[in-house]
Amino acid sequence: MPNPVIAHYQDASGVRHDVVVRKTRAGAWQVADISVAKTTIIETLTGVDEGRPEAEAIAREYVREQRGASEKAAPGGRA
Image (cartoon, rainbow, N blue to C red):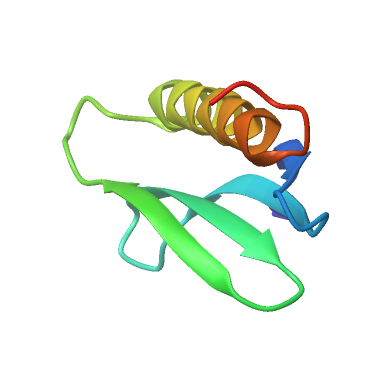
């Protein structure tokens, strides 16, 4: 099963980041931030009652936070 992009954002330097939710080999849900330079694991959910919906919610919140940080860092942004 492919790992569809939940959302994306551009960092302060203009690099695009795709945020995906994927399942690990061990069966845990994971949120990853993928850019051309690197992949960063944001969170791995290991709880029995933590599934894809929870991982997607974390991914969306992470993107909101990153977009806010990028706006503040941009010229003319709020500090």
